[in-house]
Image (cartoon, rainbow, N blue to C red; front, side):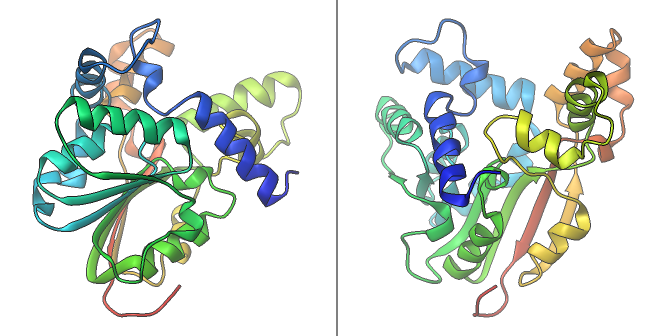
Length: 268
């Protein structure tokens, strides 16, 4: 098993090579261009996850101090800046930070994009009205430390929106079939399959009870699983029947979507 520092270096190395969402870019991927970013925006909100608009509620945060943790190629962050938020993004990788800075420049937008470790955020306590992170913290060696930092840097009455992997999702079961059952290792845990085979090393996924414990310092906690449009199409292709994807229950979704607020000062 990798130690925390080694795991973090491995995570950083993986995402330096593969900024999240570039997998949807037309091949071959070249330099940062408006055409590339327009394509990625359409792919994310028209095909893969239109749900994110209603979940994050970009326009609601006009004039508010906002932090995104794990910026990827900056599709959501660009929407937040366009919507008039006083937004800052952090990412563990130089690759994502530079790509998003280029993206903002192309669209004549201005915002800070910082290379930083979310387990130790470089911000004062109670700095932000809203903090969001989509599909990021489960890659950290210590996601609970990130949650503690989110709580610390969130203002009283501030709100959060996060998405993390669901342990009992259709995607995890598919990986279990491929990397455990078909390899004659049926006793391999879902957590181990996920950690060793999905994206960067050490990737985690959660049950609802684990998330309720992890976010226990927050108020008005709401957890829900939502099968995104892209997931439904993927399952339809796997089983050769598009209708199959449409009828899958949300409990098989890849992501838990988390909403909560902070009602008092303190720490996790």
